[in-house]
Length: 117
Image 1 (cartoon, helix red, strand yellow):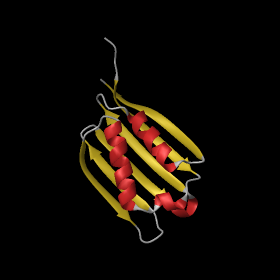
Image 2 (cartoon, helix red, strand yellow):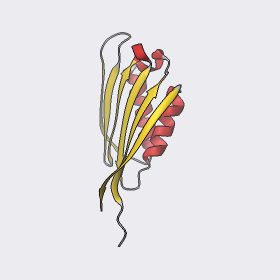
Image 3 (cartoon, one colour):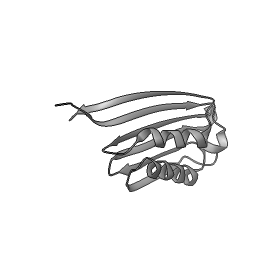
C-alpha cells in the first residue's frame, strides 16, 4: 500500500516587495482569502493585525484543511508566508496567487511533506 503525506506545507520567503503592499491588513486578509479559495480550501476563521501606520501585518486564516499565515516587514520589503493544507486542497495554487499579487523580486520556497497516511 502506498503512503501519502497528511499534508503539504509550503514555507515561502518573499523579498523585494513594494512596501505599500505589505501594510494594509484588510488587503492582505482579502488576498489570503482569495488564495485559500483558489486552492480549494474552506475558510473557518481569520484574524489579521497591523502594528500601526506604515508597519507590518501578521495574520492567519484557519482552514478546514489547516492554515495560511503571513507576517510582513514593509521596512524590508519582506513577507513570510506559511501555507499548510491537507486533503484535496492545492497549496501551490494559493502560493501562486500570493506571489502574483505581491510581485516579489526574489522568493525562496521550502516544501515539506507532513506525516504519512
